Image (spheres, rainbow, N blue to C red):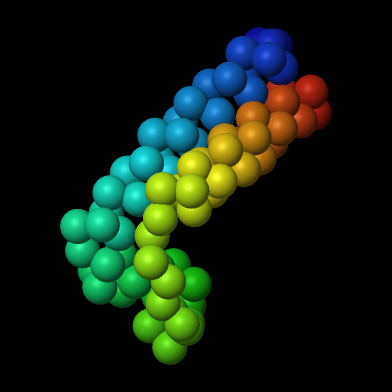
Length: 82
């Protein structure tokens, strides 16, 4: 089975966009539980010890765009290498 690079990249970017927005919503609803899960994913790093910042619209948009672009490029390279 051959992967179409652009289709695979689009699919990964779409999935990444959904996950990013779900994470943003999670942070807005329950930052503490989000930080607790992050600590388990990163082998016990205490993210609560880091300085906290306010989640602004611009911050979310910049993160969303950069994450989706990174996901798209990753999907494209994955399909090319496959």
